[in-house]
Length: 255
Image (cartoon, rainbow, N blue to C red):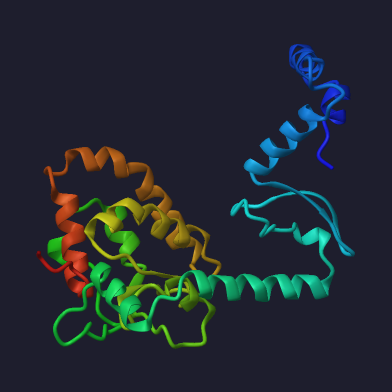
């Protein structure tokens, strides 16, 4: 049963709040008739709170759906109930979002348009930064992307990293760390690369397979980045990422 007993006794609840609750519960027609109790229960249910009493758990829980499909904290469930709960969530997800494969494929291709003939297979030996691109960006940006080579997304592979990119089409081009060969980045266009290049650089600084000398050089160039960036011609950084996307083959189709 959802009650106010704790709130009335809790020393951390402001006195003004406790007084207001006491005043409300003492109103005529509420103290003895149970109207207040019904009011609080109805309000709680309206906000998604439910009383549960079963063999494996007991208490008050919150449900996003507010219709009794209560989500139990895993600490309250036995291993058997956890397995049942997991299977139920998968089943409910399929029922509530039964999008046909063709529709799903069309939705993906709308966000990630596939060029005529498909995405090109990237050569891991191809340098991502050309001499012309070095004139469009700071040494920090150029050095960062020199630590990566191109790769293609294999959505049917067994690697766990593929699960993160299931919303992308097979063969989508991206970046792979040349040091560990494990960390990969897949971004859809110039703007996304511009917004996330710090994450790409951060991996190199943390990569356990990257030599200390490269990390030190990258860290030094990073301290100079903002100063040098202000001296670059306006729009040059966007040109750099445009060139990068063009070399990867994932430049967006003009509408």
